[in-house]
Image (tube, rainbow, N blue to C red; front, top):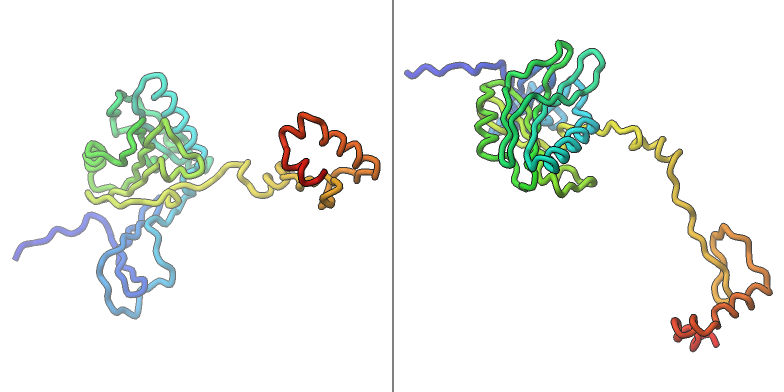
Length: 261
């Protein structure tokens, strides 16, 4: 009988609605991989559907993503090339940093040494690179690069179509995936990023920005509703009608004159 090598990681089984999930614990997040197996079990079940990533540290800050997007746009504008960076988490300050390794860039590729030397307080969380005008997601070259990292779990990202960014729907420009033991699993944008912008804070927005109430000016033919202006006096109606009856206005709005004169 052929001997089967054990998995290099301590995978554990978990069940949600009788569906088997394989769980792996890491120092940054727990990974929950859904399988196609359904079994009847009574124990070791969860009431909440497991997410692909269950973070132990904060998700990646949107602010560092924007920082990389600005750099990628600059590199594309000045060099017509791609670029790469890693998102690293500072365990002391509890903040994310963008680290740019020394890299060789071109219009179709970016190369750098995967053995990036980070500050002792920093730990690598994800890598990201740009695809300038290309709308494609991960390429065959990206697949080879991820597989070169071996069995270890890691998150990789692509910032695609740099010259056409939808700021309201960044998931259309940023693709994410988890690769572990040679297998890649797509991730949602919300699986990886959290909005940390001060000006997106609801209380700050309500204090700083407001939309004025609609202003409805009173005329002889329409009442005032929620007006912020003082009411017209009776004599003002005639001044308003004199303005309306001027020849240029009459030529521009002939139907008005036919209806009200």
